[in-house]
Image (cartoon, rainbow, N blue to C red; front, top):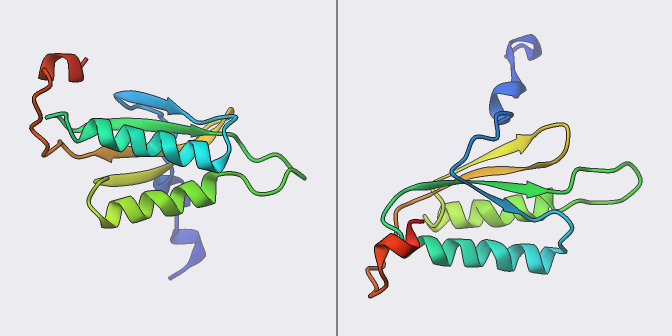
Length: 118
């Protein structure tokens, strides 16, 4: 395949369109993964598919590795476990991250759906 025929821009979401936003900028890896765990846990009690824009700090030359790679690997693991239905990298001028789609929950707990879907 010719490199000229590859368009990697189609692989990156630049719109940032999502139902919700999870801002992980300024967090360390442990806290970022805990926030994602809580997001997944809350989604299990919802009956609708949700999309979430996960914002991460942008790369800064000389600052070392960002959270993009470890968070991305974690999201791929969640994808394999069907806890996330779709993951697409996100980038704009201010940050990087991912747009994820969360499947409708299967947990039919006793909590009021109206409160959970707000």
